[in-house]
Amino acid sequence: TEGFAQLVIETKDEKVHTGVLIEESGLSVTLGLPTAQRLVIPKEQIESRRTTKKSAMPAYDRQLAPAQVADVTAFLLTQKVKPAEVQK
Image (tube, rainbow, N blue to C red; front, side, top):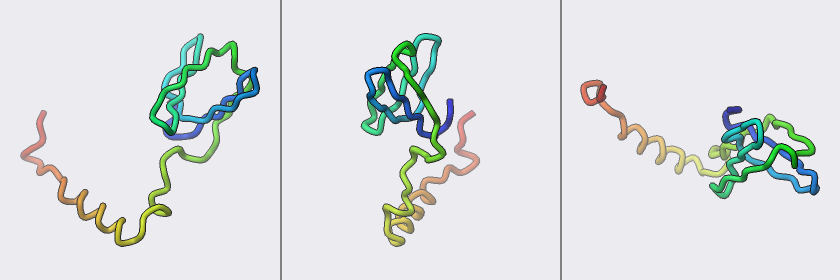
């Protein structure tokens, strides 16, 4: 996969689809959409495709106030698993 890089696919019917590459086979490309849905595009319908440098991951530092970032960080720190609790 291409990580969280956005893949932009233009189809022969001039539609543009943007998402994260979930799966690719010889016959189709499956995109993960921002709506949490999957879109399967037959390769025969693809006019062009390109990967952008923009991550599909939300920029939380721009969406959350500093106090909210502190709250999330504090919560995550309470979720640590002690080494003795790690299951093998």
